[in-house]
Image (cartoon, rainbow, N blue to C red):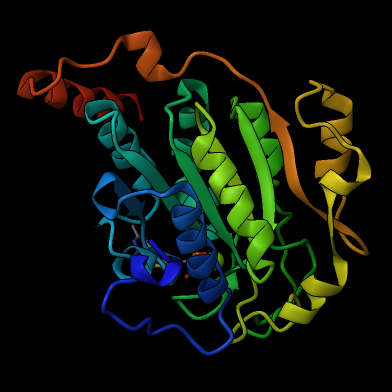
Amino acid sequence: MKPKAYRSELSPDWCPGCGNFGIVAALTRAFAELGLSPERAVLVSGIGCSAKTVHYLRSYGLHTLHGRGLPVAQGIKLARPELTVVALAGDGDGMGIGAGHFVGAGRRNVDLTYLLFNNQVYGMTKGQAAPTLDFGARPKGLARPNPQGPVHPLWLAFASGYTFIARGFAFDLAGLAGLIAEAIRHPGLAFVDVLQPCPTYNDLHTREWFAERVYDLGATGYDPAAGDVAAFAEKAGEWGERIPVGVFWRRRRPTFGEVLGAPAEGDPLARAEGLLAAHHLG
Ligand SMILES: Cc1ncc(C[n+]2csc(CCOP(=O)(O)OP(=O)(O)O)c2C)c(N)n1
Ligand SMILES: [Mg+2]
């Protein structure tokens, strides 16, 4: 299937220039590269501009509650391990209200992919500071400079136990599609922090601002599978004049499904138990 064939018949209502367009293009390209059938893929989102993505692909999709995509995504994967599950969230959705779920999911290592749509603002609710916005930054929706410091998604993913940690840029189509495909192939919980412009509310971190700074970590000889914690921390923390994108961390440990044992096929009780387990462990 060609990437365009994964698109639904709905037209996105995002602002012109939104990074979400790049992410959808990369996602469909990754699905095509993997030869995924739409009926074997499930996208799960919370609430935000980013969350609408699930409507624009022909796969199954669940548009859930603010910050609650991950528990639902984990339940689906545990109940139906044969499906490819991709959870996605805005930076407010994932790092603010959903931060507890983000941490809890890392401990479990359910085999799914989690994409963070990181535009540093609450796009849908008119540009308030998201948890990833730098201290003192003042994009145009703010009445004064950001009085809070940022949470660091890559470091938080590492501290929580994510077994695949990457960062991409929404308009580096080939690079991001490759990262998403790698994340989906990874057996375990894979996190991709996707840097994206919000052309309506973030006038600081524009498409050009990112394009001038991002560089390919893989081309520097960095090895994400080396297990070098100090090198990971340093590279993941690089931000400003130069911003690395690529895979930062990769390791293998048993997935939650492997630890629990797969539910018997077709057994409704086992499926329900999978859903309940993820719900209560949130
Ligand atoms: C429980 C709850 N609290 C608050 C809101 C209001 N709300 C809707 S979207 C949003 C933030 C969206 O920002 P982000 O997650 O960064 O997504 P973006 O729109 O930038 O893609 C908020 C606070 C809500 N819908 N539900
Ligand atoms: Mg946002």
